[in-house]
Every structure is written in structure tokens, then in C-alpha cells.
Length: 147
Image (cartoon, rainbow, N blue to C red; front, side):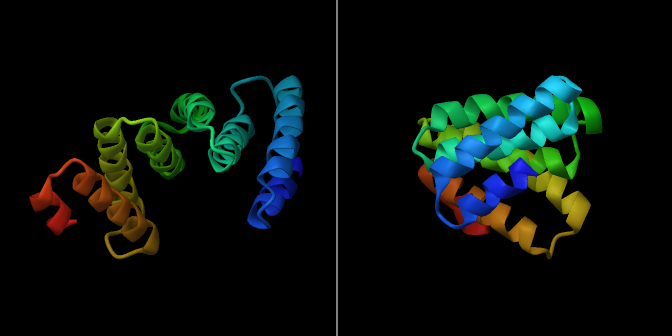
């Protein structure tokens, strides 16, 4: 409940309130369910996004890496929820000056999303656009044009 409320504040542009509510929710979830619960992973990912919105990509990276570990353990390496957090994590890595790792995570996320959704879905298109931009940053113009 606190996570949903926090995300609603984020949608309204209040990243500070989003972060506060998600941190409270994370504390409760970890205490009640333990650190490896799927809802803990989702809250970590959302909290990471809040930190990213507040200009702290290093904290975003840390939280989303923790979320991915939990999600991979619970669902496997190729689950669509893993792909979603991978795509978000790639933005933090790009902001931290690691465009190669950003590209690698987006390639992995794209493959998962294409298998899950099919090639002609909006989620796939968004990831493909991000990947095209990553190729552009890396001056891989042939792949940039193909994306």
C-alpha cells in the first residue's frame, strides 16, 4: 500500500515524498517477509527510480541491482520483471558514465521483452529506442540506424 501511494506521489512529481513512502514500505516488508521477498524487490526497484528522479544514479544503481538479484532468484534470468528493472538500471549506468554496460543491459532486456511480448509491442519499442540511443552514444552508427 505504501509503495502504491509512493508511486502515486512520484506520478504527481513529488519524488521526495515517493522516496519517503517507499523507504517506510521497504522497512516494513523486509521486517515482515524478509529480504528476499518479491515485493521487497519491486519496492527496491521503485525506490531506485525515486533516487534516480532525485539525481542520485549511484543509489538507484545499488537498489536496482539488489532488486534484480531477488527477481532472478525468484523468477529466473529471463523473466519480464527482470527485464523491466534491467532497462531501468541501464539508465543509472548511463548516467554514471558506463555506456557499454548500459547497452549490454538493454540488449538483454530487449531479448527478454521480445520473447515475452512479441516484436510489435510498446514495451519492446521503448527498449529498442533506448538501445538505439545507447548505440548512438557509443558511435555505433550502423546499429544506431538499425535500431
